[in-house]
Image 1: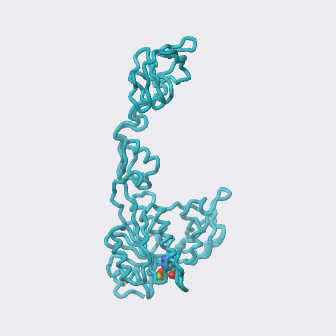
Image 2: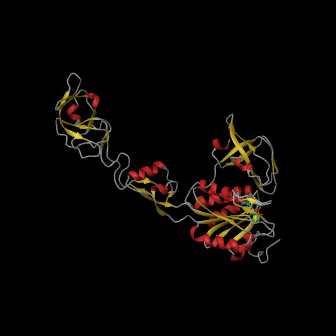
Image 3: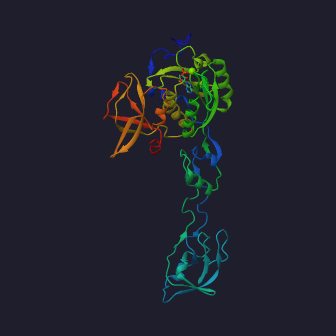
Length: 423
Ligand code: AMP
Ligand code: MG
């Protein structure tokens, strides 16, 4: 059943199925990397650096002592032994955070604390345990080579070197390095701000009483978690009734503050194709069927130049569609280089059956045993069974052309949760 006037534009609006790979590639082609912005370090955490950060000076900026002791000239202690110590005049102190009180001339030493600047003239540190203080003099009982216990200028990073390269996703140590170089902000690709709408007359917010036949809005929360996990900033726009005008208004109202929209529900062929009716005439959102299970009906396009994903309403379809299409697109937008979940080969511990003409994403629990990865389905494949996703840590990919992957066979699994958390 085709929409009137839709046939010409929507090549895939009828029965034809597009492959997951083709749909994902075309979505990735149609989303761009978000323009970089300068963000304070705390906000830049987890974001991808958009330009090489160059050291503006040597790090460390001054040479300092690695020990408590005395700063000396190595040549003055080169003959020192416990039987015949070198006697040096104490010329002053060097304290952390201050200019040394004195320089070190021939026959002199400056008392120094760990981290304090090396006084001019000194080229070695004698640790305190090799020193005997005698009023104004210090006796040194061992020789030390030039550079002993000295942390040289620029040992960590040289002025002009790349501190943190473009493309790095900023973690704690990167922020620390930038901070110590004197930066309090960084040019990064920002987090994608993603507006989420749930469509359906039957939906109510969680925490509300449901009348018979009403359904609580699960999808907004599934998506919220997925978005946070991807490093995006979710904005839950609430429940929209099955009314094309209401949806259009909600989406356009949010357009100014979103880098991406997701709606769930109302994309299948049927009387209440609210999303299609709201958008297909604008010509820039396509609705099509993908050879996948769950998640067959999908919509994607741009609205006011903002990427828009129209997902089916079933909770499992929402999760799988998010993982398969939306997450990689958002990671690309945020400048990430590794945009796909890790895949591993596992041994199936039970049969998984599914449609031969679709790529099936079966919810599985994966664990490691005897040096091998195992996977077992977490429940039946119906796309309304959200507990089967909650219990899972992976999606097993049962390829096109296979209707049963038998127990004992090898299947590829996409991991979506840290392994220790799923068990
Ligand atoms: P639809 O794609 O709108 O036909 O919805 C398919 C199924 O998913 C129906 O049973 C809906 O009640 C259910 N559904 C749609 N949206 C949500 C939602 N946000 N949370 C939970 N279930 C939903
Ligand atoms: Mg609906």
